[in-house]
Length: 609
Ligand SMILES: Nc1nc2c(ncn2[C@@H]2O[C@H](COP(=O)(O)OP(=O)(O)OP(=O)(O)O)[C@@H](O)[C@H]2O)c(=O)[nH]1
Ligand SMILES: O=C([O-])CC(=O)C(=O)O
Ligand SMILES: [Mn+2]
Image (cartoon, helix red, strand yellow):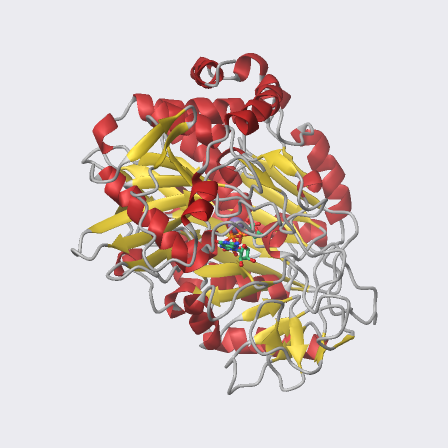
């Protein structure tokens, strides 16, 4: 037991005094049986995964099918992000804004200290030094996560650069190393001799960001978005606050590299809400001849201005935490190849009898499997084999189409930003904004049907600004202003152009109008041709949409009427949208940037309202 706050540096696990003191303080509060400083070595991975297998949390998959890979099933009450349990505890309530839960930070800390007291009893406390983005970055974005979950340690090693090398650098930099302290506990202490369960967690959950302190406290959940604190909590909620203060953008965006038949290279970033197609677009296999996509990231983009005045994006992550259902050789062959190389963790999918994993939408359903709930499953079963938010966690460097620029800490210059949501009606396949401010309006009014990526009802249309509704770490009105300011201060000719896409529009029978997936390359082609001034567009009240001839539909299995229906801008549908936008904007009161009100007024007058 090493929870003494006066331990010598060697015993403290680090020569960094501030870090040693924080770790000692947390240990004194949470009273773990032991403390382990995560090195990130292969031996450590082996030890931890063996321990997880022994505990029943992991099942080792067949080595020939998925080498060095594991299956896990969570508790049914711990399957997704918990937005109603997520808080932005800024000092002033108004700074968290109308879209976040808030509590006074001191009150929250008192409450959580009560929960954390003794919460690691019987467990090991792991200290994970990590960096989001490159260790070689000009200003490395360090974090240190304390957790009592081996599942979290193993997953963090896949999702972020972690371990001894990071700690060495933090120690070298000393006081100059700014790191985000991120505390996580499952909230499941073990009594003396008490047998552990396969997925320990607590019914009571708190996912808390303290934006001024750049600190994260998470309690009660082992699920990715709630527990891998480098991801949503740091790289979006905390980083969005840093970005506001420092003049950059931390966004819920994929980053892809597009190569035209003429070998021209373009970089595109795209923000879609959770489970709305980022990973799929990021790894797309174009169906149109001569075009090629490489990937840089599937979930998060940090964008800063370069010396040349362009906006450069880096992916701060090191792995993919992807939605399993729907992923297959047709929809996402590159994801399949990546996970088949192994070194991956699969959570809440089905386990086949021959030691592989399966999920809805994957080819070749097994005759029998064990469902994520641990029940017998056959293709005739009424229940799903896998939770709709089941996930694979796999190393990004295993992706065959990873762009070489991924290794560049300076990132890639973005030419276009796409916003997109999941809408059955109203929103056309693609619309180009008139300018940055109009594009910001499109992002600020983005709407989407809710998905299984968060707990709560699925399929309800809600505004999800820039796909960041659950991730903006401050007042969303100020966030909109920040977006507008980014455009105001920049050279407009160098800014990315902004587009709005919708792959999910349906016909009267309820079928998707647009085939999606690899066919989305046709939309990317139109976007690039717009940048080059080559493609035609129709001006509509909501922006520029493709003329039917300008969209490349050669070889596409769609009638011209179906293409028209996918592209259609129906003024009546948009008129019905206006009261929803007004209601949304009303939430912000005088925190709503005037420019967005002007954009709304312009849209109304274009619709004849
Ligand atoms: N119809 C249709 N479905 C799609 C398309 N792209 C993705 N999907 C489906 O949407 C679901 C989520 O896709 P992902 O690419 O994993 O979504 P994501 O935005 O990366 O999700 P998060 O990891 O939660 O942020 C999967 O079931 C996909 O099969 C598309 O172009 N058309
Ligand atoms: O954070 C998670 O749990 C998964 C994810 O990427 C999202 O929900 O956007
Ligand atoms: Mn995501």
